[in-house]
Length: 149
Image (tube, rainbow, N blue to C red; front, top):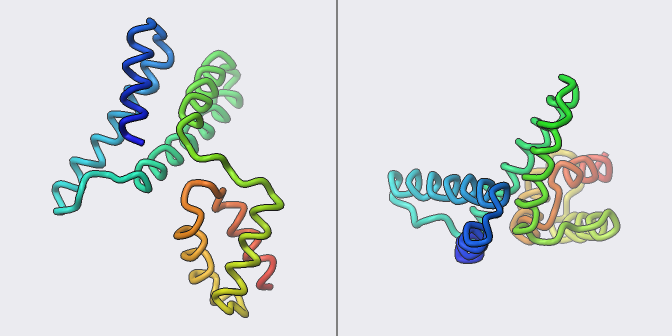
């Protein structure tokens, strides 16, 4: 995944696409920051799972910023944030639709034998392990809670 992002950055730089190259530089910097933090604790450089979580976090931050810019009547800045979101999402795995999400949650509930909201942590851990970056865990959490109630 790291190589894909670096190749896309090089392509964007060669083609003169300033918006895409700027966003990819931010992504690359975030990955390097994680590598440095991992080095300080004796861990390996960020793997694909960590890169997916970094990208997901970056998308979430930009969604919040775009909403704040919309609320502050700054549509040009909100549009810029949304453009960055589109670029970053291009590197994330395809997200599950609602039907697939519900099916995955039901399978996880059955496999863990969860019976109450107290078992929610086990279910969420299994979902994160199996479906990493392909699932919106906010939606999944709400669905698990609803099904266990």
